[in-house]
Length: 310
Image (tube, rainbow, N blue to C red; front, side, top):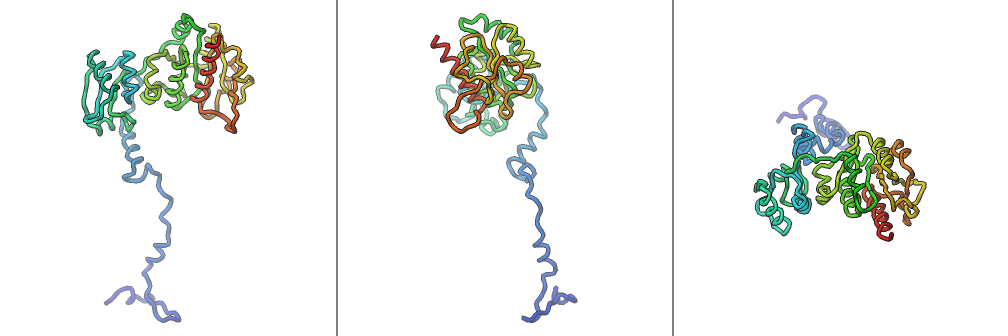
């Protein structure tokens, strides 16, 4: 039967005798297949499906409603009477007291209760861990900085604010908001650019406490800090290279703004220069720095401890 062996030159001769060649298939097998494609470029890969969905999804307007997910955040938001238009509950979920309370509060306020499949809720929330429940809320309403300062001044305790300088992870933002509420802060100040905003992810990490504290969004953080100084507040920036230890922060008893830097570079140069001083957190271990939300929690806990002692 004719084949490669019938082609001129296809038969190689060696000491072992005549052998039949592969017809070039061996050379093809030796050639590499090239670099491994990125996960987003692999057909059928979950990352490729997410990228494709995001590419086809229209950009969400800044004032569009969001879905707040998770049993604690949803129940807390409904307790705080956060404006809401619909409560989504997945079919067949195991209910607990938080789900029961959320349904009861939504019904009491006339909020639409919609039962959807778990798959549909997965799609609506973009794969977030929703625990079978989601609350549709309007875009977060920020408070003007003068109003935050006025409310802080009316408090029975010395004003305490937390300002964030370039914290871009919404989970860090949510955790800082939660610590601010836990340790008696009167408000949070965020930059309008290059910073995480109060999205559904931040809401969820805050466990709904964002409804219990005013949050301002400043166009220019340096100017906002100067406004706080004009209002009689001391501005202390957290920094690994701080000039003062947190143990020696005498200004903790008075009106103070604690500035938390970004996850990577810390305080920006202009913000650092605007602070009245920079504060370091004393650490016994070899770690060079702390996560932004952890550093904020440590500083706020120390300030709260000092105020309780007084």
